[in-house]
Amino acid sequence: MKLMAKCVPCPIYTSDPVKGPSPKELDSAAAAVVKRGLCLKVVLLTNPNNPLGVIYRRGVMLDCVKWARSKGLHTICDEIYALSCHQKNNAFESILKILDNDLRDDVHMIWALSKDFGASGFRAAFLCTQNVGLLNALGNLNIFTCVSHPIQLVTSDIFNDDLFVDSYLEEARLLTVKSKAICERKLDQMIIPYVKSEAGIFIYADFSAILPQPVTFSDEGRFSEILQNIAHVVSCIQKCILNGRLVFSLFPTIMTLKVMTPGSSQRETRPGMFRICYAWVSEEVLEIAMERISYIVFKIRKLGTRYRWDDISEKYLSEVTTCGISKSGSLHALSAIQ
Image (cartoon, rainbow, N blue to C red; front, side, top):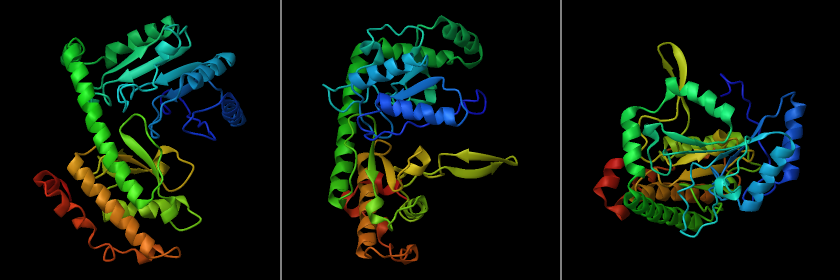
């Protein structure tokens, strides 16, 4: 979007990220955009939120749409985690329901199979819009980017089977909640604060207290290196050269325990924040990953508050790769670790 359409993302800073943006905070974000000499065109909202896993309430969504309309802007609601709410009776409401399906030509909702159905390889998404001009433009583009016929048939079969969809989503919800409980239990034991998620497949946790004070993104990077190179639980963007060109890969060769992503790669303004994706791996492997994280947190705290990064060597953390293995005893877990 940035290269081809010249779109420039501009963050909305909020005093309470869990609650969502207020009209006053939207005004501040808009002023920052104008100050950069840019022309504001659209408000993009992800609900349920990534990486917080919270659900924005009806009032917040209505305020955002009302604010955007007062400025002559479009609103895009990304609801890609809409079917991954943790409770049956949850607070999530689609923008379609909130606006009683009266989107006019300036509100658009998008959803895809990649998260709720674990089918990112399908490359299939849905757009709900009442903007005729946008529909016509996408109709032309669809000639070059349409979903393949086999995937269309599979997707059609899935959504025509109500019994399967209901049972699948319920089973996915139960498994997600179980993995979330494992993650929360270990974070509570580590005394690591985190956002109480309501949806999605991750927890946003604050590890800043165990890093050197005052915390910097450089410290977050060093902590990430330890988690990645010694404990093998962090997924980071890696650079590589392919046919003489610099390319980026989000997927290291082995992704077995890679459940953590540093906040710096998610436009976070506070160093020390990490997103833990507990649905990326099985429960057995998640237990091992959380044991390793817990071990490292314990060893760092043991050094006191005035430690140096040089104090945290691979030798000092030599037992990290055995954490959780005997406890799990699972052949799957044993074969999945590095």
